[in-house]
Image 1: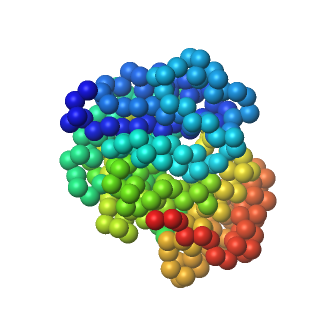
Image 2: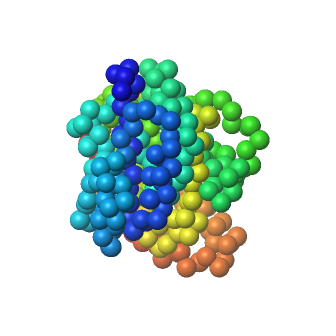
Image 3: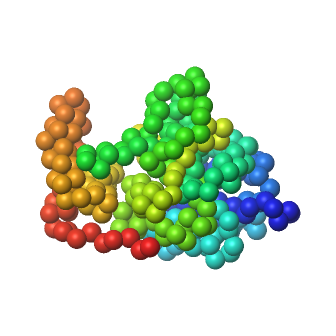
Length: 302
């Protein structure tokens, strides 16, 4: 294998998702990039899914087993550390419920190699069940409102996102990070557990002069099951983490405006337009109460 080809370690988290993970790995095995090592982190699955993966894929993948669910951030950090410890030039975090285009990784690495200010790059992600409808092209974030949006979501792809451009954050569904960026910025902040951790990491990278880019000729397809069928825990974590992000990265005035926006604008507007979803209100309230009782969120390790 030529030394000139940067080494990539692709980290996939598995949590009670054997079927999705199996399909994702098989998809990755068809990728045309010649120097990619697949690392699967089992994040405390209830069944012995590690044994099933070991039986099916053997030495073609690395298996890391966590005895507990460490959340996306904690599980991903296990894979990030493994990649750094074993000489990775890049680490790719990839959701297990994805299918990839054969050329996606080559396109991501080429884009990263062409720029000196890279924090991370992300592909054009489509919905798995609607393969021409965009799930994400990276995202934008507003510290004043604690709102993040995935640019292009729900739009049919007619070529409107055809240029490589900067984004506030690279979507965590698929994010390629250079070794030098991880060494500069650090790992994911595990206090988030799940949701907003990649947004926080990308903001930390921006504070150090690094940038995130969207790469249009890299393509993947995402099942997006957890987003389409959220639970009370999802609502709690997402709202808690949105406000925690501003508390960690913003000013006191931005924290104030974000809380007021969520309490008096976003929540009332949502429940007025979706009255049948009032069942999520307790989780939203729980998130606000969490902040009332946790006045000093930990700063991430650098």
